[in-house]
Image (cartoon, rainbow, N blue to C red; front, side, top):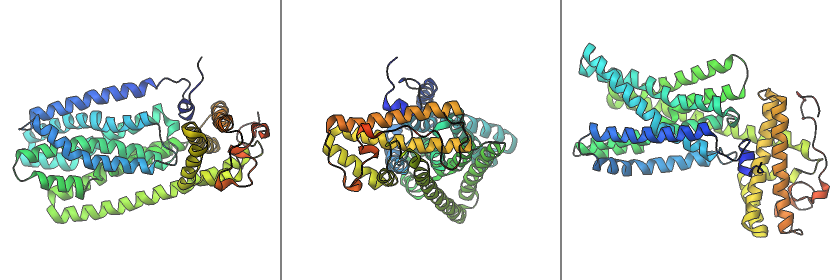
Length: 416
């Protein structure tokens, strides 16, 4: 059996093959995206030319916001394949499913109440419920299939935001196509959806993401209620925006915008607090590995900040080239995953067998990454943040001792 790659170890996989459920999800999402764009050709005059123009108008906003989400996810970045699945699900499965159900629902309501009431009910009631359900299904899928990758509120927000951005990208194409079909309306639509309120869909779904993140990191019946409450919050916020814009015009839009601004600030606060929580876990759990020589106090300070990690990779590149920089990046991510693993053990959301197997794999990766520096440059100068350091990442291999068989702050598992 071939050795696991660093990527496989970091993602907790037992082989180097990509997880089949994620590949299936990506393929299904791509097919749904093609079907959705094909339906636009049938629904909107001027297609397919306007499909291309609409996509070009929608892409800049999506690119900027996706970059922002990835920037938020720097300290403990999620697997790229999972991030692609989240975005593709929103752009494909969620968008096509919502388009079908919303259209069918509006047709039924039109028969019962007439066209105008049906349109208003669809926008303010049906669409928020349907769209947040389809987007939230992605988060439930990850909760079941890759629960161990959701380590806190930041992860829930990141996956939810990318799903929402995928949905918003393709939905904006439809709105921009409609604007192109009516001369003079397209730029107003671009201003509203691409500049004034581009965070709508990612922010709505982020509320569901918080509930799913709680469910992934806790035990007990509260997990179910957290997911339900998160979904209800997403639907309510979505309905508030749609209803304010549809039923109350500009004053309603201003009121809904203010509410969403408050929610956005709250989400930023949650992200900041969660970042501090992760840094605290690094400082709490990794010192137990100092006697083994795998980690040292200076390593902890480097791991606790993005600038420190960036300087470490730059130093590794300057002394050991691309291989050294890659090894430093592997070490940093593995050390972060090790701290998160201990946090899961403390919450008892991982079995003892899984804990020890995962810990041994991560520690092995950290050792291999460290040894890469000494094979390339045995007498490498110490980095500027680790003067007088004689252990940790830059320690000679012979200084490494035995791993701790207990955890600081209490040991839920029997010693090995």
